[in-house]
Image 1 (cartoon, one colour):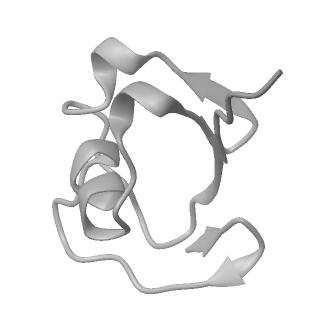
Image 2 (tube, helix red, strand yellow):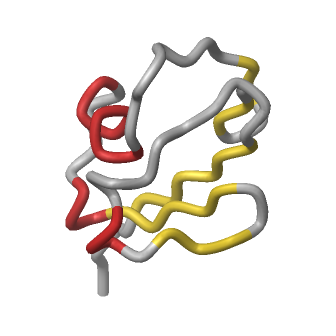
Length: 64
């Protein structure tokens, strides 16, 4: 799998939510795209990842 352009391995049954936890991301502060499609936050715990997926994780940053 590719995550933000970096080749990574995926554990069987890993979900978007478990991937975010493993990488230290707060699910409320990121947007996730899987194979060119935005994953709705409500589906993070249901969306199972596969070895050939391309994932983009975008962190929201506050500022002013």
